Length: 466
Ligand code: ARG
Image 1 (tube, rainbow, N blue to C red):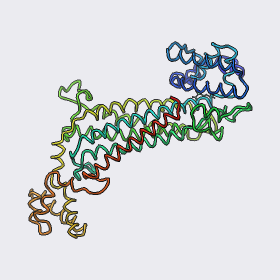
Image 2 (cartoon, helix red, strand yellow; image 1 turned 90 degrees about the vertical axis):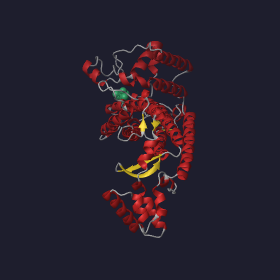
Image 3 (cartoon, rainbow, N blue to C red; image 1 turned 180 degrees about the horizontal axis):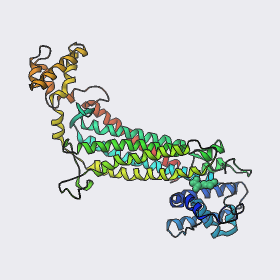
Image 4 (tube, rainbow, N blue to C red; image 1 turned 90 degrees about the horizontal axis):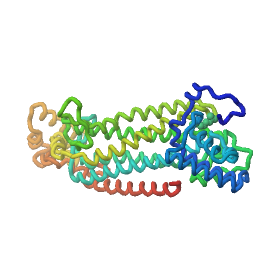
């Protein structure tokens, strides 16, 4: 039997049901739906619609459904269109007539929005927690890297030597923005839509402020039409997931490149790499590649869902049911990708000699030579030209750059020491730059930031139901 058997007293067409059911994937909202129903029942008690006895019966029935679902003894019925229908059906089976009062003053429209917000808040927190774990791993590796250096690239051409810790933390800071974004998204999604009803609220004396508080939201909706049709929180979380995935993809791409024989900077641990079914010598960076590859799928979820929202009239439309699969999949994929990437990054062996020798080619100190001239009051554009000419000559004639520097009237033997291995990286002085002192400071700032973000996460745990 359907929930609307009064108005439409025939069985729904099979093909319509096949096309419209969401139970297969919205099952995972069960826990949140039950919690929200318990709070709704309390709200009905305060409104004088239910008495204590009825509330006790309903709460017990809801607990029973909860255990059945957890123990996997809950029997789904083919007529269960979605998780909300399934739970309400079962409650009525357990407590009969009283169960029929559960849906008073509520619609599935505010019900689904409430459950999805509760779910998203919890999952977003878990996502942030995993991102912080990856950041902590990067911090640990950065600390271990000490004074190790490698070439920094622009246009994927060797540009300047930089500390390895600087390179690793560059990814860490991008992730810090992801965490911040997730926190902000959580704040905006932290609004209860319960009490908005189908679209216009209710004629019954319900109190959405009360239920919002009991549900652990920081407030209630301001407009019932907006409350049931607002899926900004899904779109925002999908964006956060997509940009996070873009960052993981870039980290993955770097691992792919750096672990290739052409670079040889990283050696992957055997447990975190795959072999080839045909080529016996191969060791492949599949985790890094999948981190890169999954990103397309996540961006697709964002683009697809924004397209679903575009042009929807107010208020609830069934199109909105399409919010769940992309969101669940985006979160699932990231919750798999992050631990795998942590394992990968944790176990990568850095080949410090290869990195250093790649960064020691004297041309990489070209800008330092130019800046040395600037300190001798040569205008930078002129210094740039002088050094550019020497580099051209060195490469063109196959003469050692040091020899030309030593012989040059504006440079001379004093400038030659800048070309010595490991010297250029020591010369970076500016805050936030790739030099030793600045990176040391950066490591401190980064670890302080992680502590602060962990605290924010704990505070979120405090205000939310665990
Ligand atoms: N399964 C639906 C969804 O996810 C629940 C709301 C259904 N509401 C309705 N009026 N048909 O959006």
